[in-house]
Length: 78
Ligand code: SF4
Image (cartoon, rainbow, N blue to C red; front, side):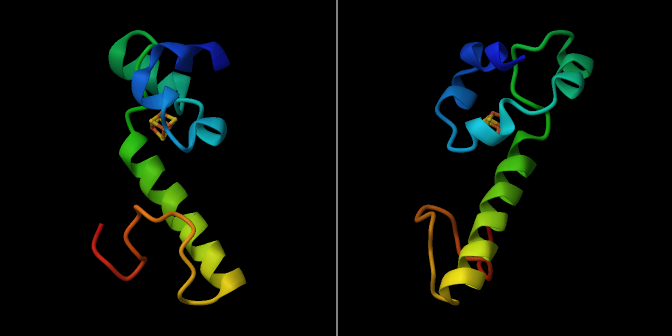
C-alpha cells in the first residue's frame, strides 16, 4: 500500500506523507475505481493534521508558538 503514493504527485510533496500515506485506499478506490489518487478527504486530513500540531505546540510551548509557518493560527480563518 505504501507504494501507491509514489504515483500521486500531491502526496509525494505533502508534509503529512509519512503519517497519511495518501489516506484511505478503500475510500479512494470506492470513489475513483483505482487507488492512484489521493484520498477523497485530503483537504480535511491536512486541515486536522495542521490543527493538531498547532494545538500541541501551543500546549507545550505557549500561546504564541508556531511550528508550521504557512498555516494560519487556530483563531484565524483557514
Ligand atoms: S494529506 Fe492529502 S496530499 Fe497529504 S499524504 Fe494525505 S492524501 Fe496525500
